[in-house]
Length: 424
Image (cartoon, rainbow, N blue to C red; front, side, top):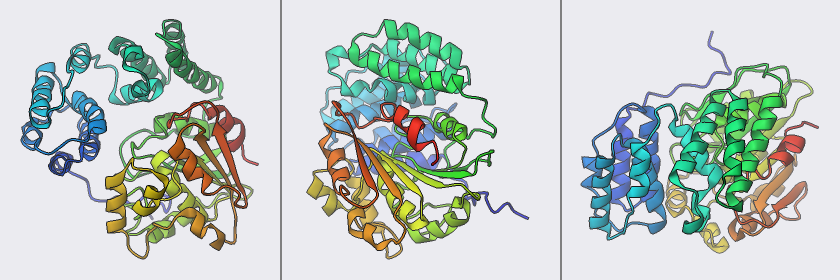
């Protein structure tokens, strides 16, 4: 008999599908979508370089300037040699009339250490948040690579070596911003090193839309809606799952590779949001004496609120997440970060899906969970989303003072591990 807790498996996706998607997005001038597709291809085929001619041939639409850097990083990861990357940059420059500085990337390709994974590099980028700093103050490529190598040790379970290496890098940080980010990472690694060995298997970071852990000794269940980058605000799933395991939670990690921000369900669970809710219900029931905690980060924030309310969660924690998803509601807040995702979501959504703002429907639910919203006080858009729920029963706003960062997971980690991840 099949395990009812096991996720239903959808048909396997041919990795070539992601190259097709990248081409399609570029044809429509959507470089963000192309970035996601290329990353998905690289995750599926980490040891295989696909010729990029099909992508080159479609670089003929105006680019979104703020999406060029993520696209270049994705292509850099997919390239095994700097000559191929330079060809791509030349084509991008010719068709988009964008000045590209390939040396920043080709040096990294040329010195690439095969022992450092894409996941470690992504974690390094999320830790350093290079694009949040003035160009002249950003850490060097070699420094970021050293951070990635240290974090690779942590991914391999060697937290002591990771701490030792990061502590040395902390002393060489080019400026205070980088020192603060490294200090946050060191606190996380120190906690992981001191924690007792988990009493259940830790989930890995393979790309799939649902990952369900075994039950450990604790009676609690946590559902985590990842952001559009399919991480927990930059943290790998395997790392965040260790924190949840330590706190006694069985975990259900959810991704939405369809790019509908979970509003239209999750492919392997149901064709609509409500069908997905029905499939999640038997998995989401905690054991006697346990609680259901729902967490949403960034692009998973809206989903955590809507699904958490439907599932009767005991607590919902949102980290830099949205509380509306319809383009009209986003426009009223001045949120123009994901126009393609929001427009596609509304075009796809049917009666069984989610598009209503949370503040408009929260009063319809008999059970009111405790809701905590973490956001950067100086980031106007994230603050505006949270303020829509200010004053509602059970809602608590937790602004991070003196910061304008979207990625605040490490900033709020102490609060999470000392509060939200310690069941009441």
